[in-house]
Amino acid sequence: MRAMTRWARRALLSVAFGASLGLLAQGASAAVIGGPFALTDARTGKTVTDVDLRGGWLLLYFGYTFCPDVCPTDLQKIIAARGALGADGRALTPVFVTVDPARDTVPVMARYVALFSPDLMGLTGSQAEIDRIVGEYRVYVAKQAVPGGGGAYLVNHSTFLYLVDPRGKVAEILPASLTPVALARRVRTAMGAPDQG
Ligand code: NI
Image (tube, rainbow, N blue to C red; front, top):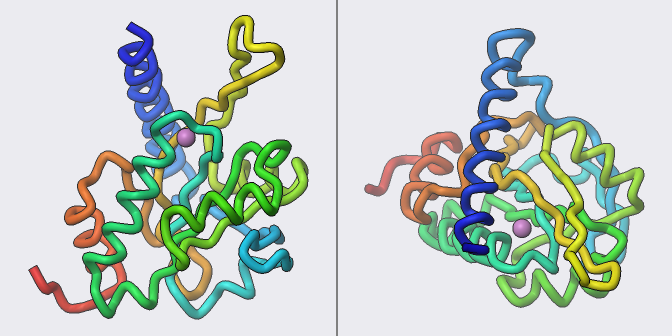
């Protein structure tokens, strides 16, 4: 029952978020998704900005290290998809951005991203810095107290992947429900690399 509730909630979030993206596409432009940021790269402890990261492709995923199951599954998928890209994958930096900076400090994030791949960048920052990028990318984030959990909480969040091109523009917003192979194919197409099947 608990698992069903979680999946149902995730599905509802995806539907709600997809609808809001649809409205954005009809109204202004999908170009309103994304924007400038200055966050801390957990692997180096140094500030990194959207401008610093231009010149290569980014695959952004928003989540948090305490996430019980969804984030680890999706991050594994991202790393697998990047591996499936072979040599082309070297032009793609996978980036995990926390939506829970209070708990996801630099050392916590550094340990976590290292579990998945030495090539996975982990970004954290102050609550204000995270609020900014979450707003720019229209990420759904909602804290949920764990009943009887003594202050413990979960963070419900949308799970879309944002493919950012070398100019810093969002090229594609992809659902995390794609298989690693399908995800790799979509990324390869967007990157303009030859299809290798
Ligand atoms: Ni998560």
